[in-house]
Length: 585
Image (cartoon, rainbow, N blue to C red; front, side):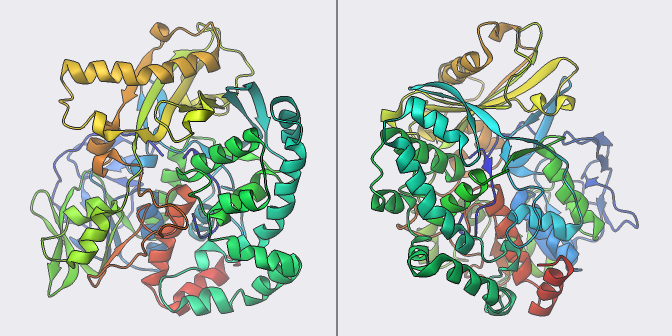
């Protein structure tokens, strides 16, 4: 959820943005702006200081039209531009980034989505998929590094440090007498498997048989070396990579309640499911990232919006186009093929080669005419389980006036009750204070804070409510109280909620309305061993999908990988291989 690690090829956010009519004049500019805005007035992006252009660039057509500028859509579009394809990314709102966008109010720059990152500056075959995309685009992302976060558990409050040995101290104090030995046993069993989990670079994957050339054959020596290094027993264990991580935990006979709860918490933060639903490959990669010598966490110096800015720069550097406030009303099908999209104002935008939807599977379905898909496919989408939605609390406040300690940590996680489970509503609250590491995100001497309950807020509680009604306001107050209490616990007795200069509460209806997420969902609730995330092609020729409704799944690295897979699949194997050569993979 808050994690933006670099998991392998197995596998954040609210929006206060505006939607305005699309300005239908298309013209191809000779000089690319940072952001393109379909509007008659100039503005400045809330993601930073990138200027927004006054009119839509170019003709109403492209080789590939991408619907949505989330991380997956931007990675797909930017890589296609890098492949010298004519790409047009259409975004309904006035800010790019989708669930990962940032916004500014009264000088406070808020993250709306992911806030805990790792591997953004990594390079090479085992790098974070997003880092590999940025490398391919020639974009860098300055980050602050740190190695700790505060946790508030039923057992007590403590500063948790990543690394191979620091967690042992916490186990000795808060867990049972055998906890240290069990943790050592777990690390000893799974860390050798990480070489297999990381053997294929995410950027080498494509969705056709060309993958035999770009991935399997190309990296066969490293795969073989990994299995030899693991030995017979380790190679046998590698067969569990695509099974639920709980199976490994149970096979090792780990009994300590604290360790099992902690593993569930890490799994939930990473993928929105507990250890019985997450792929072992994801968890093993995370353990390799967090519990190796010298490991660190990272936070972009200019906030999570800097990730979006870097992808947009890469897109436009290679001639790609981004149009904001360009709401796609439906995908146009001719002779059984996707040939473009129709915008809300009636404008048709032709796609010469493909349409790529970065919307969720349920929202993509709504863009298609009745009968365009087989009934079995529609039924499969409609019966796919969903994660619940989010509650958000965004605060801006004066650090001195609120008596905030100078050594405040950037991240805080509050678990109220282990017995209810980490996936229970109103139970786990995540808090990020990014101005601790990036003071430029708030006015001098002040802090910006984002607290949220990740994918646990039932949409059914909010469904049908009028957002202007007293009932809605009362429910916002009731359901946000647990976040306020978590913030007060993290910031100390000097913090007073009434002294905050900015206070915003986001609900599932916020997600549904501004992020255009079906029922405000975080994404598909597909558990390892019980199902797999769909691929990227559809029954409709020339229509592909990327994002968290597709393989590898939910999370920033996963959606970045999905966008890359689609981009790779739309070009020849030779072009794909040339890119891998160019960035040294």
